[in-house]
Length: 198
Image 1 (cartoon, rainbow, N blue to C red):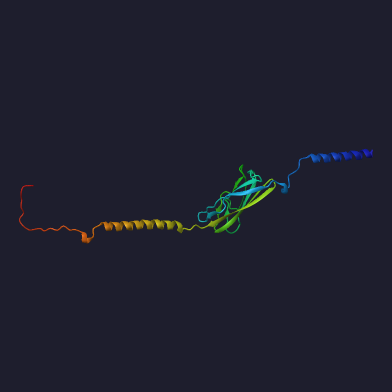
Image 2 (image 1 turned 180 degrees about the horizontal axis):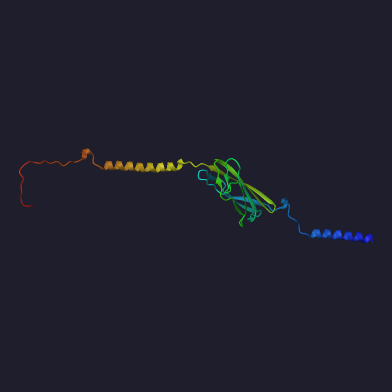
């Protein structure tokens, strides 16, 4: 009897092992995950205006190993917490978004801080266990106010020069005192003469 019980247990264990082998595999480990890549499409090398509080929003595109866009990837933009940097509309320095159907992700509403200089934005993306990283550089700068005034000064100088030239030409167009002809005549006193109209 115990022999039959042992055989039944053996058969049960064997059947369970076959069932486990027939199950679909679980999630692939990161080493076997499909590779992804981040391409920076906008914002690289941008010059942000501190005085006007304007910055260029970074835009990236996530693709797979074949170059096809990856939709639904999680993308995080990391801005520096100190030094030259920018902030998001909520005042933070990190923005996490999902890529659209074209694999595009963007950090909206960047505003430069008051520190001038270059800084880097770190971008990370993850999708089905695959991870990618990229960097893009931007620079905060205070615009030179003199540039606009210099142009205005040039325009005013040109107008003033033209006016001066016109004055010279006007002076040249007039006759000099030596060339001025003055009509002269004399009036002789005497009795008036009246006669019929001519």
